[in-house]
Image (cartoon, rainbow over all chains, first blue to last red):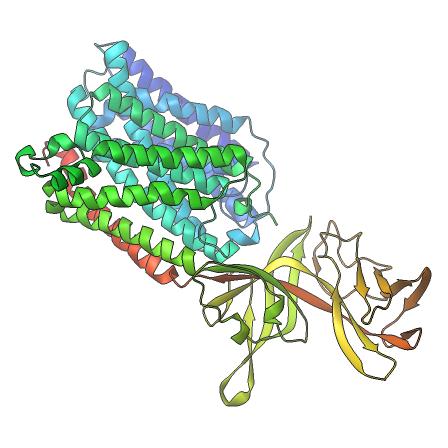
Length: 268
Length: 337
């Protein structure tokens, strides 16, 4: 019961943080401490829900869509909070990023909550390593997506909005460097996944649907980085490229593992 | 790596122009796009060969080499250089591994030696065949299931040749392969019951062998197989009748031999029921049902590149991290790094 209450309280706090961020931006007098504190509180309460479930089922949130969404709602909000705490000049990204993450929150709340069983192929230290690196990758990409949304809105939406943020040119540069950092974690994530696959299924890479889409994500990031380094496209083009990367990565993270019947599901 | 970034005065000669052309960023993007197209087509068509990827991967490799020659900026950034060289090493190592690899599967009856000739092997063109040197005896194994047929870890004991001609016992599983002569043998969910039969011909010469019944519990309702008697004899239809199934649907259970199982043999329209130790006369020949055992299915994997692949990938990641850290640290500064 406490687990459910904590989950709902956490979701409510995430939503309140998003509302506070958007409300502050619309009023033109944002107090960034409010959404930051609310996200921090949501993370604590949500962590209690995740922890209680972990203790009850004796395994981490890795198995079904509810668990994967729940852990990603937590990690992506954490990545955003850490990002704006480390880089205060990006605090004004909160009204762009937090509402987007509420889509995940809403999706999570539509999921059936049931007890899951831990597949034997998941019983390896490489799973949490792989998942942690993946969350770092996606979390950093989400911060860059916030910057991209701001660039797009400045060009085609509210040019007067997000005044507290760096210039579009500087935001584009920051986005580029964030994606480069995310690329490091994506490479490491693929490596850890390959080691896990060798242990779990006796092959390190077999081009199963999830592996294909994770490689397509890798290609998309690599193509963006090459284009950005050598051609310096306009910030709007870079912003759309990052949004595309996010779409592919999102599909790989939240679509393929639950669409594919490949051994990645581990339920043998 | 764009042509525009190249000092055009240095690409005056035809070969230099060719190298600069091959180093173009547009080739990089084109090869990446072709890779993506092949992968997406493979997803849609569902039947494809990863061999097709050797074309864009080869193109990217040439593109990278040309870029290293042409673009001084790439050579001057050690982290970026290490990353790209590491990627090239990963590609070469993986290609070498694929050319020498072997994948396969084999079933081994408990208490018997693996028969390398029975491995359903798919060797790559340059595979150094040493499978016939592999020897191990399948020992006992234990597989526990949680309720709702959730398979847990497999604990399979195998006996391998040790020092002084003695056999040593090692425990392997799905994630702990037996490694011999570079081959890795992983246990799989594929396992079942083996009917051990002894055939004695008219002259009294006998031979003992095992007939594997289909994988259990996947084929719990089809525990049957056929065996063709030698010398043009009839084909035996074998069916294992289990009064009580081994598995339990909604409770924990362990895979093992069934209790009170009876071997039903159909031959030339007649039905016979045999218990271990009983035999059947067919003309002047005899078939004796020795006992019921278990068999374990193994996945066989050979790829000598694995440690080198991991090392190359680590070096590549280290190079990228080295390059990225300096860039990212500058975010909190003036972004001029």
